[in-house]
Image (cartoon, rainbow, N blue to C red; front, side, top):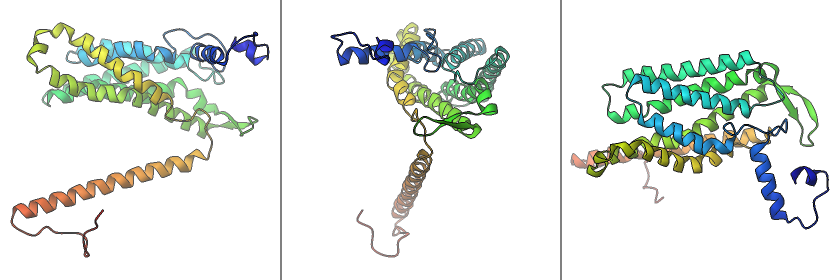
Length: 295
């Protein structure tokens, strides 16, 4: 139906809703560059069912070295397949490059997880639960650039607003790959950071101590709840069609966020100093010479 509509031969009686639904199915299953049908596990639509299982088990089995190594290997195998399936077809990747990328990312993830597990043995239990996220973030920073290194070497095709090709750019490739890394880490961050906090509290309950066999399925289910929201958020974090006009907007937003955070920290420190001075029986010290700002 999608291909016929592109050729202008839509079957009579076809509703707009049917076309939109057909396009949604088509976009989720076929590669945008080559038009080839993608394998099921590598599709972005498989991120929730596939990611929730792997994330849940990574967060559950983080205490022993063999479990850490096994689940980090499973996760990197899954990530490698996703990266290959959603690769930029205009910059083909050789089998050797894919193998090097896979081995490097798996080594980085395992080394980070095992190393941090060793370093956090005396730390609070919650810190140890965050080790899988650190390993996942480190591996993403290695896996994606390695898998798409041809784009960094040769550059990617750059077009103007009228879709006319104007050349190749390595800088555009670096920006695009950086955005992919950020979006992948953003996709995993809420679940892998907040879920350990939730489980740390739940496991102290008497009823949870009696059903320890259900801890892993519960983490899988909760991971799915996070990914249901975070997969579309992460995929929509950056525009698919990127223009240079986006740079000042991104810089402006980053600057405003940094200024707001700095002001918030300064106010909290000032307030803390005032409370401390009041407790000691002294007048709070104000940084403003004039009257307090009513805001």
